[in-house]
Image (cartoon, rainbow, N blue to C red):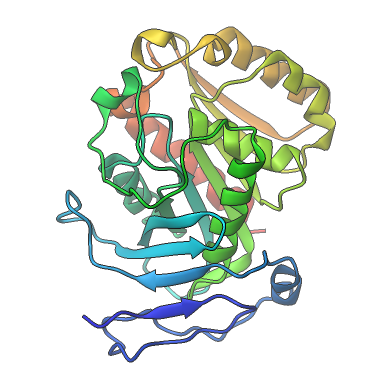
Length: 297
């Protein structure tokens, strides 16, 4: 298959000659706020290139791309496109400290069945910690290095990825959500708290440092919190992912009149979405319903 190069500058799409069945179909439909989304694009614009499926991704119904920016490197991403008539709202999936993995791509495929364009991206290279035993890594060595979830680098990375996702063919630029597990959830939350434009947040086993309560007034996106009551460092958690911290942050959101939905799993651990088939199924059901409600407006 010949590569398809997408230079995302405004809504322009450049193709390198791939046949229509192998490339990204061009969708010219624009929503009323398309121009607003384009105006907010990062500079220089990220470049999206179709790539071959990486090792360990056999059998997954996705299209693989690289997303690159001069100051970040190149990030691998899997795009799961729903059935139906485009354009679709989108959700960008951010992995935890254990690294990018097949399991995140599988989550994207499942979520796409609910009508959203789901993109699982490798937002940093490598991975470590107790949580590595719950995933099947997919290598992405050219991605940015691991950084704190609240760092400027993490925010810049999400900004680039979201701009790329918003301007994919078939995507609605005005309806984009973030899903984050653990460190990915922390990065998603920090992005929203620092003015990042996102339509909804799904936070799975996320860390909630006490100082975040003071920043709650800055938050405008609706949130779905999913957390295990047995979250601990034993399977990849930390002091800030303790369930008491999550409960406290939920209370701060509710006290501030923010839109929040929360589900706490009595037997859930930090990596419960990967370790428990029942919890995974319930989380997918809740995430799908939440995204349909929040992204259809």
